[in-house]
Image (cartoon, rainbow, N blue to C red; front, side, top):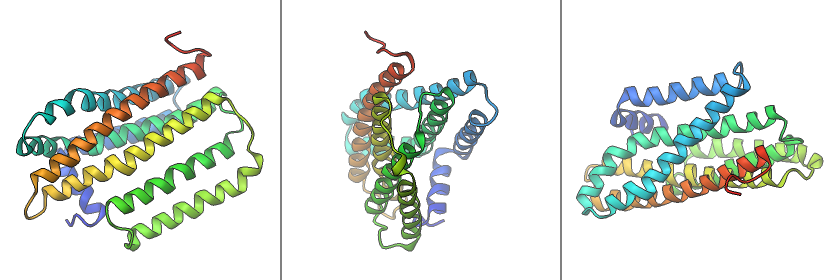
Length: 253
C-alpha cells in the first residue's frame, strides 16, 4: 500500500511493528477505554487511567533518559537501525497510551465531581488540541494542499470553534489545578500528536523509500527521543498536579 495514504501508512507500520503487536495495542486500548467509560467501577476506572498514564510516562522517560543517550553514542547507520526497529512499535504504543490516559482522565474527573462547569472548559480544551495538532500534522507531513487533510481539518476546526461559541457564555472560574492540568495535557497532546507522531511517520517513509538515508532516520529519531524525555518530565509535573487536585496537597510536601 502507498505511504501517501493513512491506510497504507498504518498498514505498513503495523507490518513493521508485528501485526499481532499493533492489533493487540489497539484492541486493548479500545476495550479498556470502552470498559472504563461505561460499566467500570470508580476503582477500575481509576486503575485503567493510572496504569495507562504510568506506561505512557515510563516509556517516554525510558526513551528520553536512557535509550536516547545510548543511541546518541552510535554512528548514524547503527542509530538508524535501532530507530527502524523501535519506531513502528512506538508509533502504535505511545499514541494509544496517551489517548487512553486522556480519554479516561476527563470522564474520571467528571465522575468524581472535581470538574464542575466542565462544558465550556472542555470546549476550549478540544479546540486548543485539535486545531494545532492537525495544523502541525499537515505542515510536518507536507499535506496542507491535500483535500484528505483539508476536509478533516475544516470539520474539526468548525466543529470545535462552534462548541466554544455556544458554551463560552457559561464559562466560570474553576479550580486552578484543573486549569494547570488541562494546559499540561494540551502541551503533551500537541507535542505527541503534532511533533512525535509525524516524526515517526517520516522515519517510516524514509525506511521504505527507494534509497533510505540513515542520517535522516537517525536525526529524526534523536529529536523524537529528546522530545520524549521532555514529555516524560511534563508528565511528572502533571502527576504532581493530579495528586494535588485529588488530595489537596503535593506528594512531596
